[in-house]
Image (cartoon, rainbow, N blue to C red; front, side):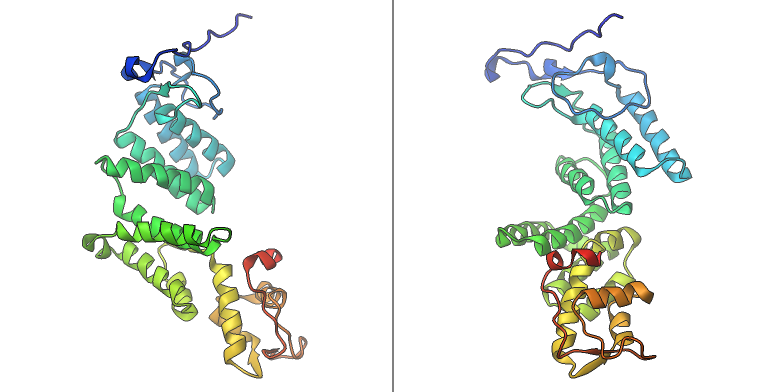
Length: 301
């Protein structure tokens, strides 16, 4: 069997001598579906799909996703492959894969970002939204306002997760908030995200859970990444504010918890039940010691 021809050799020229346009890989592949493989060398143009084929690939993945005829593992693999053929660079090398940065590229990243939110895959979402911010800044059209709302909500998550460098999350959140202009605030999705940010900052759990209940579907998806953190904060506040007992039903309603899973969450969080077998279970708020962070309650999730 003949070996596939290798990609172009790595140039040994100084930056000032390089023709950067000539270093862009132009694809010739007509294969619509292709697995994602991390680049370790300059790719062979015969394995890279040109823009018209990428458009077909995106349409195919979207149709399969809507029809629920594939799982997220397949979808994520295909979307990462499409992203790679559009814009990725080979590590260490100066070659870029096609360098397609237009409305198709924006759509690819927007579609994958929404899919990632639906599946609570914040890692892929963050990769997509980071690229989208750059594409929007280059003047490319897209759903900029919608994704600004998601950036605000994601930045709240990062800020809540900050441990080693507590300032890192706050700085990132401040930078995102600084990009919000007056016209953005008029958008309902952005206005909702800003209210969530304020509720979290003020430890206003009642407002937070009200906003969660009425959140746009994808916004709620991002909020779910830190809803347990907010539940723990709220439960600690409740146990300090209401003495000596508090009905379990009241707590579950306030924290948007239901059934046996809700009972288990409250118990594992450190709440002490007065009589777990009683019809109307009470929580001994004075005896309860609610865990301080989500890290102390991994089994709650």
